[in-house]
Length: 128
Image 1 (cartoon, helix red, strand yellow):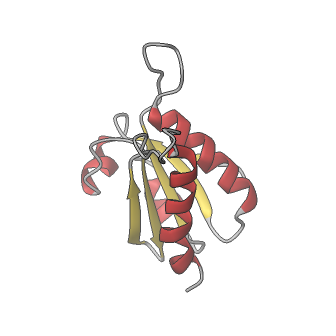
Image 2 (spheres, rainbow, N blue to C red; image 1 turned 180 degrees about the vertical axis):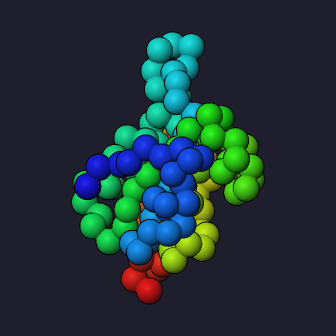
Image 3 (spheres, one colour; image 1 turned 45 degrees about the horizontal axis):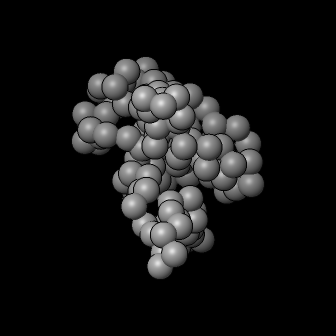
């Protein structure tokens, strides 16, 4: 499944009125000064991959700065933030894409941490 881009105008139809549970990725597209993806862009890569393998939920993406009505309603002030909705209700969320988790050898574990965090937080609600 691909990630659908939504906005303030179609958020209610695509998310709140969806019969399928929905993961909303609030984003802030862009790059860092060195030209690499910002944390929101990096998180989007994981959401894209997750959407291809998870058939139990619908995935949507929304730029929070361009959609102030919805962002304001859910108090979204930064990105990335993933919010899980079921039957129109907000169930849980994951805030940020962390880059400072380091093991004893100094290897950054951000990607594995993010994937693990998504699985921990979303797996219980997906199986309800």
